[in-house]
Image 1 (cartoon, rainbow, N blue to C red):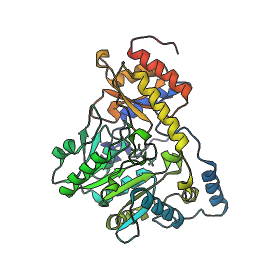
Image 2 (image 1 turned 90 degrees about the vertical axis):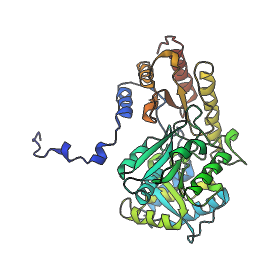
Image 3 (image 1 turned 60 degrees about the vertical axis):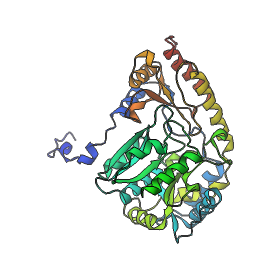
Image 4 (image 1 turned 90 degrees about the horizontal axis):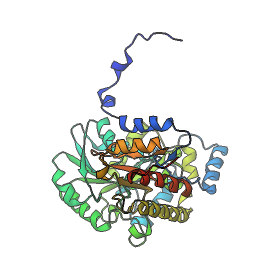
Length: 393
Ligand code: PMP
């Protein structure tokens, strides 16, 4: 109505919200939005559709009027499926006595509830740098401090790198393997060292394993994704369904761990998210029957295409999982990652500069969850840029 506001809304924004900076990623998206049909390597989600039985189960749930609130901790059939799966996968006996599990609104929901439950203002948590974008914001939202542990150039979060960062204020170590943005998969040996270190210092481990299914055969151990959960139950195991089954918009995840902590997460869920989406919970109740190996194999091949393309041109660490590679901008180019990404955008290829995920701006993230044709075309342009070859778009 063109009415002039009488309140200065800008001044109403909390310090907490002001302190969260999204300028890096926003700039990429703004530049990308101007492109017509970009080769988009910036999207952090799989490119395959949700499996038919899962779609059908969600549709059936809606049709059968299962559209109301569920129990705060999750619909019993889904919770039971998760409990069986955890027993089979990591050997945990989640019986509600010492260990418990809660279904959350996405992995993000689980991580936010965990932060609210565990962190007092002034507390610290450590995570590897490069890190998932939301981790520092999680700290800011609760007045805590995010402590990045630099893992360049091999992106391995080792006990040796973490130890000097531990203080009396460290509440937890947030491990993300397979990792975003690097695709790094830590070995069981490395994870067991982290477990020992944290145990010795009374620090909790939170393991964000949202990409667990996308652990390639070469990074698996005994056919499974390495996890600290194989060595301890004194931790929070956070997993999600969105990436694995291509349903990021369904907003589904879960967190398992000591009952004392899960009970608090449930209390906070009751007053925030209330419950995870009801139809999505029913859609996923049979999820562990769905075989994703074909998709995982397709991504393994794409990973190889990416690493081979940059071989001899730039430094890439062979990722063991997820669907990302974190590629170094050759120092000889004299460009920051942001500048390099901008050049890519000028040639219609969208990637994300390292500064979005790191205190450094030397690498960029490629999400290779795209068709082989797009991947080939985009890689040609990016490698051409690195070699100083002009490629027509
Ligand atoms: N953790 C990591 C490491 C991620 O990459 C993402 C999504 N990009 C999330 C958590 C959040 O996932 P969700 O959509 O389940 O909230």
